[in-house]
Image 1 (cartoon, rainbow, N blue to C red):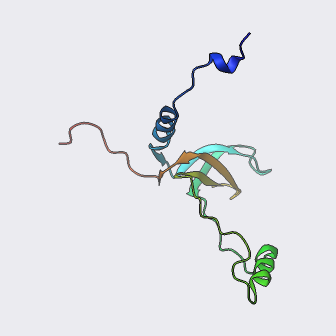
Image 2: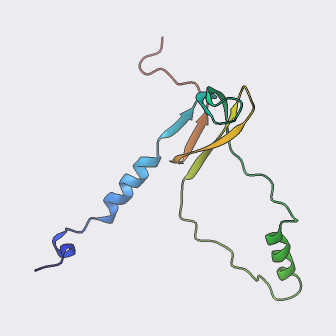
Image 3: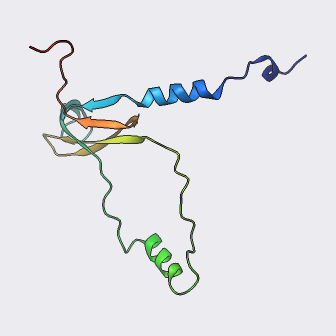
Length: 130
């Protein structure tokens, strides 16, 4: 009786890698308005939402982690915490910020990973242009 792993053929890592890359190469185009459910107590039904891309705010100098890091870095002794260098990901997860046009409630929606993202770009017609 052989273990199950011995019966399975090893999968070439290059095929996995190619599939992975092909999956994220597509351009993602999202309209600037979207009709979706608004969960606020005012609406509780599908409404038109304004779509924008989420962007992280400016980091505060007075957050506890930043204060702790700065105090540790003070004086002699060089860099005290590890600096991250081994960046592996080539794509980012896209986060949409949806704002209800009626009650102005905001919610966030995470999309899959992609390299190229556009918001409300016009689609070019396929085929010959006159």
